[in-house]
Image 1 (spheres, rainbow, N blue to C red):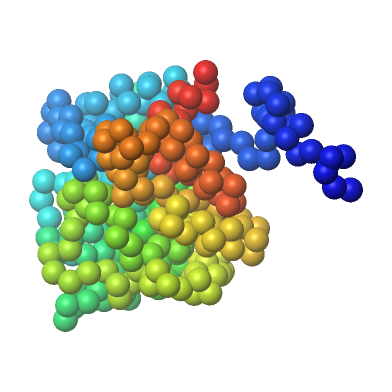
Image 2: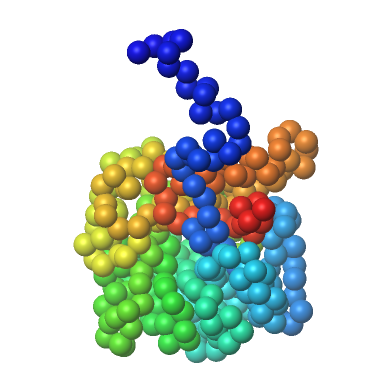
Length: 324
């Protein structure tokens, strides 16, 4: 049957009807909010390239947790910025480091808030790379033992989930073994299984103070031109015990999100990254687009592609709209 019998516009005639037949839905429960935690007291330092985002000291986390609870956002992912760094990033497995104190603060004041920790070394190393540097490149296998120590340290402090992001070969296997040996069999791993060497990370490197001192991360993060390789990376991580697979960035890689959703029967997460956030913010500040509509359209597209969970700096703003 064709026009005039078939009229797709019939189902678009009112907001109520459009809502009733909507295929893709967003809810606050699907969102994870990133937090950048720094040393000091009463620190709330604006991140210039990410308007509305801040580096926060631990004493601000109680208020943040209450805000997230009020909005129905169930989870955070923590990034720590220590006051001291060295070549190996040894502070990453110190018992009283910035991340552990942040975990403990959140668990004390918001025990129901789900706390995920980023497992990587770029914030902790003096050279800004994601592991032990050898001859100008990251030594993959030497870094694995340190990743396991970092993950166990976070679990001991009370982290609910760990999320390795360094794109080291074997990282999930190493972390899973380390957690299991220390009795943390029930701590899940959300692997940054498919993380591209992307230009969209620029603002994050200001926020986390983790830009490489020299070179780039193209020897361990993925080539943006590759799609089949993403399936291979994800398959390896599932075989090593990953509970959730992540794609990063999100908007430029919607096809990759859909590919993983079609191929694997584990939950898929996507990181709506700093550059994607900053582009919308900058365009809105210049009056070039409607920020609210662009934000919701972007997040909806990530869900439509197949993401079950979305890490986004827009979590609060989106949740407010969803709760109207």
